[in-house]
Each structure stands twice: as structure tokens, then as C-alpha cells.
Length: 226
Image 1 (tube, rainbow, N blue to C red):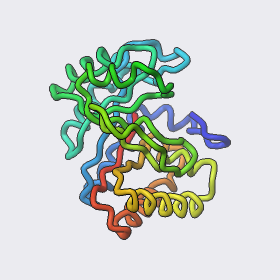
Image 2 (tube, rainbow, N blue to C red; image 1 turned 180 degrees about the vertical axis):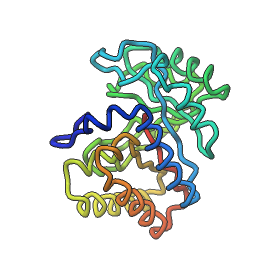
Image 3 (cartoon, one colour; image 1 turned 120 degrees about the vertical axis):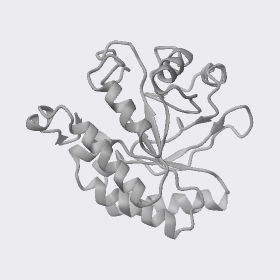
Image 4 (tube, helix red, strand yellow; image 1 turned 135 degrees about the horizontal axis):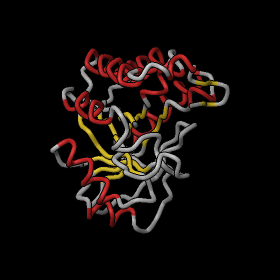
């Protein structure tokens, strides 16, 4: 795994539970800040090596442990779908592991297609986080009417790998104020595996939470993508 010059170390890869421990660490931060986060989890059976695939499938060692870890925590599980498999099938597969309905979604390597809303509706998914830039803090326009509530993601932790942290946080603060003026819901997205690659993300994540609270955000519910 890499972001620019940042790599996960070989000795870390040998620790089979390293990502589960990272998830637990993020959960502890959320609980300390009284945040009920949304965890977006893949539920694909496709090959790990497909172009737009995830790094894991439902057959991956540890997948059941991941679901168990999340279902035991005060959080909500949503779907992180791939775009070469039916969203309906992926949602049904995830429900079979969690025994709960799936109401939240984000596409992996999203291609804005004509079928997205139709597939989300068929899967009875109510909220989508697929709008946003991985390396920029920007408030994108989203469809205003329809059966799906499209909530733009205004900050991804990927931005910290390519920009100075003070620039990212400053941009987030500006974008958050713009969203407040427009009375819009927004989301922030942090990947737990990135905390392994860049431990400083723990500090940045705490600062983003603090800033959002200080700005009077009334719905602080971050999303985490797996």
C-alpha cells in the first residue's frame, strides 16, 4: 500500500491483525468523542486483482472478525461497493453477514453512471457518499431531489498524503463553513489502514473532530471506508 512515498512496512504486513487493531484504535477515538461513525465495508466476491476491485473479498481471512468487531461497537455498517458487480447483490451479501439492512453507500472508483440511483433504490439504500475528491477539500453539487440523499464528502484522509496538514485542515474549515451557509449535510472519510501508513493521522483526525465541534456542526458523523 502506498501514497506517494509512503509505504506500509514489510514487518507490519506480517502482523495479521494490524488492520483490525487500527480499526479498534479509530473506534476508541470515536467513542471518546461521542461519535457514532458509519463504517463502509466491501462485500464483493470478485477477485482481489481486478482493476477496480478491493484489497479483500468476503472470503478473506479476518472478514468475519471485521464484521464482528464492527457489530459489537456503537456504529453503523454501510456498503463500500465496487462498480463491476451489482450493488443489489453486494448489499444482500453484506446483510447476510450483519443481519441488518444497509442504508448507507459509497462507490469505489465511482463512475457517475445512469444506473447508480436505480441500483441504490433497488437495494433500498437511502444515503450515498459517493460525491467528493480524494485529495481536495471541496463541496460538490449533488442531486437535490429524488429517492436518494446524496451527502458530499468534503474531506478524505488521502489529502494529508499530498498536502501539508495545516493546508488540509484550513481548507476543511473553509469548506465546512460554506456547507453551513448552504445548510447542507456533509461527511468526512478516514481509512483505518491509512493510520498504519501515517500514524500522524491520529492527531489530524482529532483536530478535524475538534474543529467541526468548535464550528458548531450539529451532525458530526464521520465515515470510515474499508
